[in-house]
Image 1: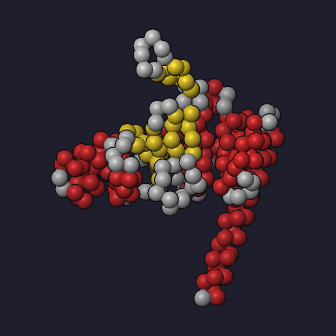
Image 2: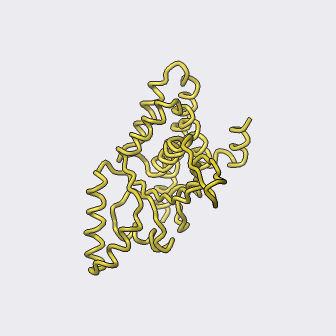
Image 3: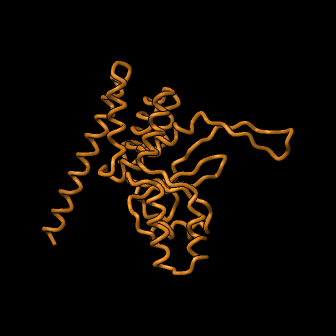
Length: 226
């Protein structure tokens, strides 16, 4: 048992060192972002890869999606003559890789749900769909596979698990969108073109510090507002 505990301690220390180095790299890039924007762009792009740490992938995905939708507006209201103009805002709802049964991101005011995953295990997807009672959900997947291929794999897995076409179709209809790595890179390129790359880096740093307990979340928000 002592050997196992020693291995766990070494693993924790290695992870801690890796994340401290990552945060230090983000802070260094912030200092030179105005002089070398291409380096910042390349750094963020390198984090959208299939072999990246799952927690970092979720943080970067959130940051990219947040600023992709940041300046997009919708008009809504209860009558045709009285409409509200509102920006789309993405919220992160908890810690990464948390086994809390929650949904990772929520978009206001559309009410879109996002769940981040790195698996193509159909049971995981349908568990997420079940826990929100088949409310439409968008899956952000750490894969370069084509969206249609992902959907086909999920459909085939559902057929093997349930075998009844109506049940399979009900689950598949709840998948509102598949966001794969190529899609995230396209979103990042658009955000970069508009000029949000430094904001995305700042968001990655903020979320990383919250995730790795560097600073209380409320303090980080106050720092961002100053």
